[in-house]
Each structure stands twice: as structure tokens, then as C-alpha cells.
Length: 331
Image 1: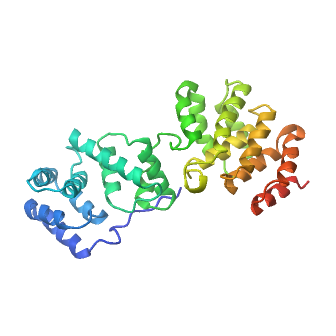
Image 2 (image 1 turned 180 degrees about the vertical axis):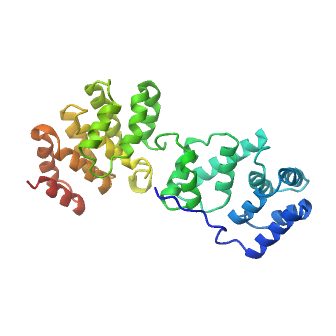
Image 3 (image 1 turned 135 degrees about the vertical axis):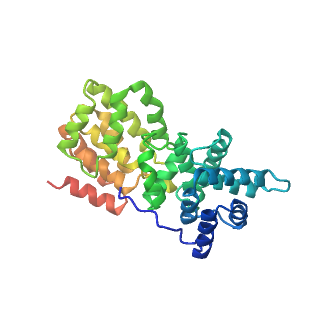
């Protein structure tokens, strides 16, 4: 994925306010600085946060102490408390407290529950970075949301991807939840297979097949077939996004499973044909996944896949999918 540089300031940030915060931060007047930070209606954006993080440690410690006092003062509201926690995430690199980490974790969990695709606010990147800098893991659900944000071009999320290698698939879809539950027992070859599945592309070819066989070296071909078939069978029921679409992080792995089942690593089997046919035919399946099933059926040894494609040609109504089937059946 192409990385997008985070701009110097968030689109809504007032340059005058940024200059004021930068001046107060440089002067070291933490009392006035805390007042200005707590007076805004929204969380500080990237530019303001970068000015706060640039302060010397002792000045950040003094500001953090004052912010905590303001949050605990009589009459403080839940909104002010949350705002203070975001500001603490901005300034506390190197001196975080466990209680702050717990609050940041809960904040991110709440955002992930409320939003599947997007989070345009500035609090999520600040809080996520603070937890990662403190050596604390993000939950799988939060990681999944950040990956989806990156897929849709949010620059801050793209810059965090290298720090979020786990889990290998996003949770929240029946098939990916099954994979994540089974991976610990299946062992290292299968864990290494997931990135390879995600790298399958629309039509991987022989080089991908050879690499898959190398990753699964020592795993019996029948075990490969049974395991991949059980995962793909669940994936044919659709994913966790709108109208049954698959999570964009997980979708390439669905495509990779279809290709794996039609590769030399998995022996031909009637169940393979049935599952690949379901991947093409079932209503929640989108054309990009259906296309993978069509191409996998077309290359199955023995001609059983082409028989299934001819059956599907008379049943599938989607125009693009029918065109893909006709193309696959053309000699």
C-alpha cells in the first residue's frame, strides 16, 4: 500500500491557534497553555500535537500534571476528562501511567465499536500512537479499524500499518474468526501462509503456487485441502461489511484460498468444486471474489471445474460475473 504523508496540519486547524500553542509551548507557560488546550471544542490536530510533543520532557511532565488536576477538579465533565486523556496521549511519551493506558484502550475500543470504516477525528491517531509508544498492544478490533481506515486513504492510519503486524487477519467475519482460532494449533506453516494468501493478486500463477508449496512443505496435501476448504466454505457466506462484503484487508486472503485449492498443493476433490462454485454463486459474494472462484474452477485438473462453470453460467444473474464465466469457458 502506498504510504501517505500526514500533512503538517489537520484541515480544520486554525493557523492562528497553532501559532499561539507553539508560542506558549516555547515560552513554558503551562498554566496558560493548559487553559487554551482545554478551551477548544475539538481535540487538537496534527500540527498542535506536534508542537506539544516537541516540548522538553520536564515541560511536558508539568503540563500533564496540570491537566490531570483540571480533569479531577470539582465540576469536571466526562467530555473534559476524555479531552484531558487525549492531551495526555499527546504529551506523555516517556512517562505514561497504567491508568492512562487503560483509558486510552477503552477510548479506542469505543471508537471501533461505533465506526466500521472511518474515523476522521484526531483523537484516534494520537491515542493509538501513545499506546504503541508505551509498548502496549492494540486490540484486534482496533487494529482492524485502523487497517480499514488506511485502505480508504487516511494517511495517519497508513503510517501505523508497519507497527501493526498482528493479527494476520482482521476479526469480525466468521471465516477469519475461524482461521484466527485455529492458527495457534495448526502451527507456523499456516501462520506464514496467511501473508502469502493476501499477496495472491487477481491471478497469481505458477510462481505463487511454488511459493505456497514451499511454505506448506511438510503439511500433507489432504490436510491442506481439508483446512483450506473449511475456511473458504465459511467465506462463501460473505464478510462483515455492508451487504456481506468482505473486509478489504481479508478479501485478498479469500482470493488466495480459492487459488490454493486449485493449486498442486491441494489434491482434486468434489468438495473443492462445490465450495468454489458457492464462492461464485452466493448472493453476498462480490465480483472480485467471484472472479477468483471462476479462475480457480477453470484451472482445476480433470475438467470438473469447467462442468461447474457451465452449470453456473445458467444460474448466475450478475452481468459481470456471467461475463467472467463465459470468458473462462472460451477455449
